[in-house]
Image (cartoon, rainbow, N blue to C red; front, side, top):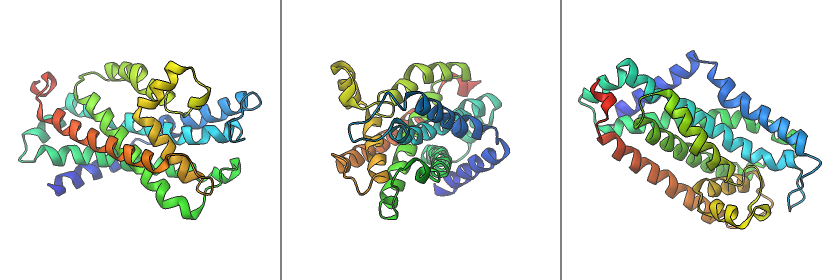
Length: 253
């Protein structure tokens, strides 16, 4: 069970090394967003805790990197189905749990790697990242990475075209990120938007990551946010396993 998962995880690592242009989409693009929005809104926005916008948006950029990496890693499900690799794996004497776990761990590992690279510039934007809060931060990032990869896998498994996946991404995943507290706090949103932010599971992932970044500045309901994020990750794993048990039209081609 774990050997197939490890094999698929390693395949994701090798694929990433050979497709280095994915770094541009998953890491460089969010950084450009962060710099442009931070510079453009820096003088017109101040968070309630006194942080400037470039600093406030730092947490949201970390989550955006995790999201983009999850998207780029799970779109490979569609590519593998089109190339026939996925059909070969499905007919092998391997349980679906190993297949799903390998894909999710591979995507989550890549997301963690690129997210941690971005953390190296925290000091230069006055984000008080501390060694004491690092374990919490890494756990929160790992859970968010796993949950987003699971969500991407769940969507990609149902689709047969990368164009359709990008359409779903623009319609569902990007608004999910926008309504997570990454771009603006719930306190400054309208009531209906604040309500959507409360029921958005990614909101709690952002809160948990922010607590790890600001360890010496207590974030409200941080423990609850981490628990909800863990539940979110577990639910995505279960739903991904459920989806993998179903045979799609693309599997028969």
